[in-house]
Image (cartoon, rainbow, N blue to C red):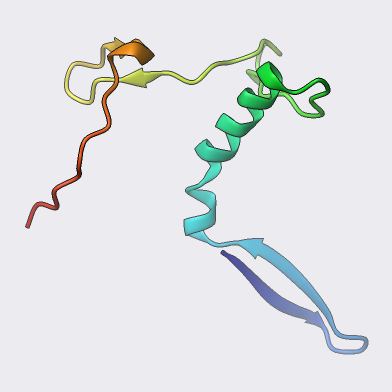
Amino acid sequence: MVVSELYSKHPPRYQYALTKKSKDLEPVFHALLLWGREHLDTCYKALVNSDTGNDVEIGYYDEKTGERIPQEHLSVIPYEHQT
């Protein structure tokens, strides 16, 4: 999830970066920030709209219609791989 690259041989120093797979976890980290906003006594980070500074929330949308789906209408079902 993290790759390192040597940028100084003496003394040895490394630069670290996230892999593509790690960057794909960003929505999960955002969800944890929002959870902390609601459930922690002290939350040290906020997820905001960079243009307005307003707090944001996570939404779910129907892939075909684009309609926003209320959380109470979500279902987790077994995933069947299509070949």
